[in-house]
Length: 435
Image (cartoon, rainbow, N blue to C red; front, side):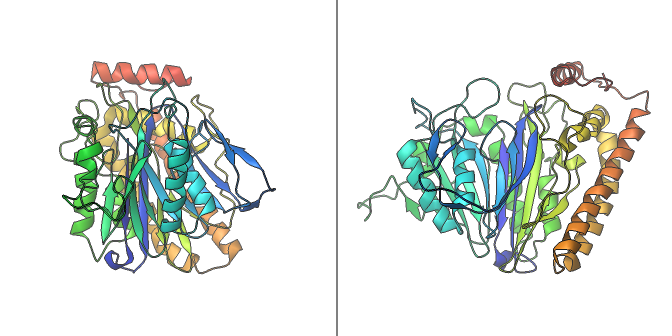
């Protein structure tokens, strides 16, 4: 389960394009942040993606990605041209592919590596979709398949692309836009493969009504999550800032209780013992995109409300995040080190989270303020700024880990919630956490 949004230049306070995605995965499905530089490839070269081998491009662009550790593709990414993209699982009437194809995360990475704009990306992605389909498992455990929707933005415009099997529809974003785990394009599509050109006479095809599976989005909390992101963007339209985007990514919805919520009804997902709540927010990437440059903000950690956004710059190596995390705790990667905070804080969520958030917000505000001048500096000053932000963020996180570790009263009051975390911690090899 995921949520992606964009605010086009006319909707933001500074006239920039703002984009973000909260990537939701299984509890121990660690997300890795990776930078892949621009590369030149030999004629006839191929590339192995998650389920297929496909022809490689002669040149691939630099990308910064947040990805599930086991997939070739990504949850969200940005390339050197300021093209940003996030992908959502959607459930349609056309999920009948009998052989492996290009799963949504792979389709997204291919587009980020090979295209400069939303329109180029749509042309490439739909061509690959029609050729290969999108069959194959897209989950770490089990063998689950779904179709995909995408929200993409470049420095000038944003688009939504939704798929149903090998069919697709696309709509340009006007002002602001957001997607969740459901088809959202109705009769307002700008391009649609299910309608021949020129369109036949008669009523205009309602894409979502024709291809969406009724009942599934509500069980996943998708309509409520999309309502939160969309309404908040609309409410702030004309004055949207990076801080606005951060706040949306941490929205839990009204009256949220992570132990008892029936469905994932907030953008900031936390796993629970209920049937459809075995995902959590595993990492966020946001981007402030301008014609001259792109500033990326990412957490690199789970639990948006317990994480700190840090800045990274295209063209520079990432700060040291430790080894690529897997589904087993390693004690060295940023993602798993942060789980020492996350899994303690969940034992006393309603009291601890606001205290942590107040500390972390002050630090983020410092980062945001300093970024205005930092992004105008040269490579060495940008590198120092990014590394310093990561260092300060970890120091603040580690301080809270030590505070919570010293509390002898930290425990889960809900027995089902306690059992869920005990099982997840054991599977990851984590010990010494609240019970």
